[in-house]
Amino acid sequence: MREALRAYRMTMAIGFRAAPWRATFQLVTGMVMALVPVVLAYGAKLVVDAAMEHDPALALWAAGLLAGVVAVSLVNVFYYCDCVFGVIERAQAYAERRLMVLLGGVDGLAHHERPEYLDQVQRIREESRSLGTMVNATAGMVRSLVSLAATGVLLGRVHPALLALPLVSVVSIVIGRRARDLDVTAQEVTTEPERLRRHLFDVATSASAGKELRVFGLTGELRARHDEVAGRVVAERNRATWRGAVLGAVDALVVAAAYVAAIAFVLLLAVRGHAGPGDVVLAIGLAAQLTWIVSTAVSYGTSLMHVLKLARRLVWLEDYAEAEAYVPARPAPVPNRLREGIEVRDVSFGYPDTGGKVLDRLSLRLPAGKVVALVGENGAGKTTLVKMLCDFYRPDAGQILVDGTPLADFPVEEWRSRLSAAFQDHVPFEFTAREAVGVADLRRVDDDAAVLAGLERAGASGVLTALPNGLDTQLGKSWDGGVDLSGGQWQRLALGRGLMRTDPLLVVFDEPTAALDPQTEHAMFERFAAAARSGARQGTVTLLVSHRFSTVRMADLIVVLSRGRVLEQGSHAELMEHGGLYAELYDLQSRAYR
Ligand SMILES: Nc1ncnc2c1ncn2[C@@H]1O[C@H](COP(=O)(O)OP(=O)(O)OP(=O)(O)O)[C@@H](O)[C@H]1O
Image (cartoon, rainbow, N blue to C red; front, top):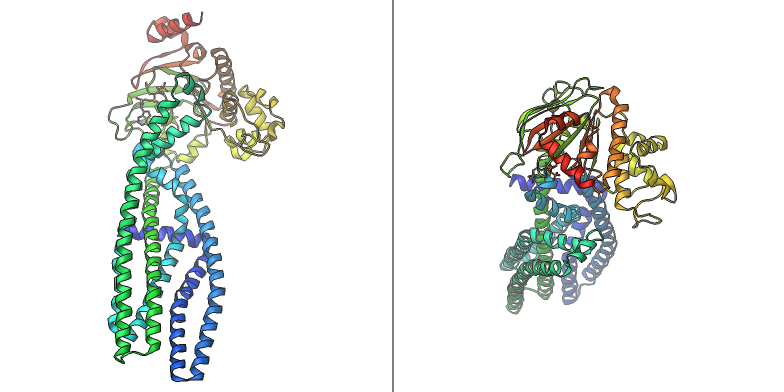
């Protein structure tokens, strides 16, 4: 219950922070709107009473009341609608901003990599717009409840037994909620198949997959899998919709029976002289509206419950982000330059809930100012070690020391501000070419000289010659005047980003050139090494991860990882002389290229 309240407060705060005046005004105008139909029904009763009693003063008063209420209602509806759209639009943008901060700013990466988190994250991303509708759902509920209360008071004045009519609404609300629950449950249980369906659709329609699909003749297979999984999703969701429709029909029958019974009862009262004609008109008017009021209440109530369910995921995300946020107990400043280097001491690590150690008491020294190459078979743990050095995950045992200070003592942001990296799965930022590189160092994002220097260090200046407006070229075909780049060109821009910062302590290249031919990769790694050696004054460690032994032979230190441990390490010459796995694989690869 406390968690539900917290979730509710959080989503209401989204609306009130995004549009405080409009949100308040929506609640107020909502209440006015709630009273309008009730007052109109009462005005109709007064008109009938005045006619029956030949009372012109009362008739005039009732007519004035009706005219006034209609006028107020017209103006009120206008402002109410303006508030509804104003609040929803602003709140949706605010909620998306909040999600971007939470999802993109979480210290670790687990929410992007672990299936049990991915489902949560997907639902939040998919329905992020609903997070902005809590004020609307609440305003709708308040409106319905005020209408219901006012209707109850007037019906009670005709005869207390008529109060049973609003009580029928409770049954209706329960049935409506059950129907909504069925729907929400169906959405939940189909989250993973739905993710699979989208993945299959994306693969089957993406340009990058086009070649393999054709060569392997996979289009039919993917379509069949897509149909199967889509069928499962649709069947489950349809089942829920049908069961919801049956419940809706039962609901309608109950409400209709109650309505007929109430009218019959008031007519009986009138025949026996216990109620006047005005009361009959009032009861018929109110009972007719009651169905609408109740269905509005059910609709807003269920949408409130739906948003609340989503809001609980937001609470989960907030808690997760908070739990992942790491503040060192004794924060230490990140050194300006490295003197000794980075030491990985006895580090063990396994991904949560997967069992097994990926890094197993791994010890390694990355000397200051040196170029270190990390090689090893697939799954040896190279990228995992890179993630630990970037502080995306923390060791289960052992520690990483930077010039003798535990990495864990550095505030995460500070350490990351002294890193630079290029990964195999680089981001194609569809900004201008200048920004696509400059984002690596936001302080100098508009500094052409700095951007060009980064590209030059990466050997990527050639990309600019293919761009019609040089650094000003908008990248990405989907934008006006935008230019599409080849995979290799995007990759080179990513390398430029990796070499844009001038003061990193650690630069990581995790197979960023895997798609390039060995000669180009070799030339590029030579450049990275040259850039690294020019930054040796501040002790920058450059870490290259590659599968190509010939391109890493120029590294000062080559580390061979196997099953999460260091198998061999040394310079190329030392490792060749040692005659171990490195020498064997090096010979194998060079024979293959001869
Ligand atoms: N997010 C993750 N969750 C669970 N297990 C993971 C995750 N990432 C990697 N692993 C597992 O950890 C092991 C090491 O993976 P890692 O990516 O570090 O290897 P690698 O040496 O970089 O391999 P490659 O050369 O193929 O890139 C593998 O068995 C992999 O399946």
